Length: 130
Image (cartoon, rainbow, N blue to C red; front, side, top):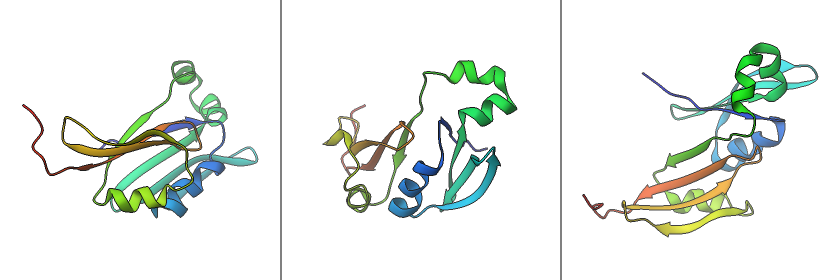
């Protein structure tokens, strides 16, 4: 019925301004772990993104951590106004310059503070090839 990415990072606090200040998400839930945030749920318009620290995962479900070490999540986020998102991302290093793809999307990519790649995309209006 629903899928929500959980990005495993060393620290959540540096990631929050990326979503809240730049993209207008709200921090809906936080769970402490030691002296920091161990888990956070961010939400906007029915879209959710979750973060959990490696330390929190190690304490909660250590068997899953080995599978996560060295891996990252790549998010493909379709948006209504790519120009608006591009303005919000000013100053964030690009990992994929803006382009128009053969599958009919305008898109660009950044790396969020936790190290995960995010591609923002908007349909170009052209019909993608079959």
